[in-house]
Length: 338
Ligand SMILES: Cc1cc2nc3c(=O)[nH]c(=O)nc-3n(C[C@H](O)[C@H](O)[C@H](O)COP(=O)(O)O)c2cc1C
Image (cartoon, rainbow, N blue to C red; front, side, top):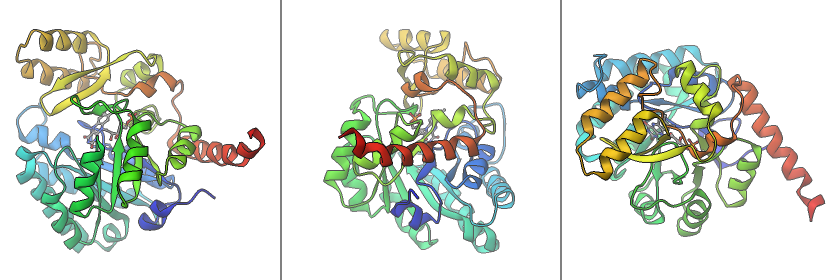
């Protein structure tokens, strides 16, 4: 049985995390991943975008988070575990505090939530601003980093797990320091004592074994989980991932940071506007709105290079069990190759 310290700390069966994926709440996907024995993660960034008036929907950000915490609490089996992602970008700190207030209220009012909600995943900023409040409510803090230097800072802040996320991953990546997962994970494992989770480019059992060999205690996946039956993303979004090759992504600046996404008419034009030094924030938000409405060609279709390795939409449980079985098989057969 493939068990690591990640499983013990979170009470999960498999060392697999579903990464948060804005602008969707990912509540359906997170529920399926948690029920399958991994850690599902709820995404708050979409509520933040709404609060900023950037999307058409106008759900109050606190009530939005409260509703999805209640939904996943009620729709997961006993023993399931989930996390909430809270971005800690400087300008979003007041909202991050609001989200944590909601988490605290829900933990205090519902014993089932107290048993299932295990961690806050902080990203895109400094975890130090939230760490004390996270510990005060009795949760673990997992922080996402793009470089070894950021990992050292996160360790100093006292986070419980570091998610080392390489440049090949989907969504927000570092533009300045595009470090590959292979180099980043190994470097972070050597540089810190905090347990490390590998992210960026994973989709199968071979990837999981590779991450464990590098010294990580588990993997986080985003793009692979989009191509599942339960994921709430638009059908055309999933189809584009199936059709993409490893060469079909690019990085552009989005208003909330540089993002890896699929090549579409939208992303190619955004890249062109960027190269001309034009402020394209409004155009970028239009791309996010188009995606939500199902217009992928003119939309922001965040995905990682691993899209090139994904060729089928699977139920989450089948995917999770396949990854674990494949990893166990590879480990068992490794000696015969030497
Ligand atoms: C569509 C999409 C949206 C994302 N949004 C977020 C987010 O809101 N917060 C976050 O911490 N990471 C976000 N990420 C990063 C993922 O959580 C995960 O770390 C990343 O996808 C891992 O790389 P992979 O796509 O190669 O598996 C996003 C990724 C994708 C593909």
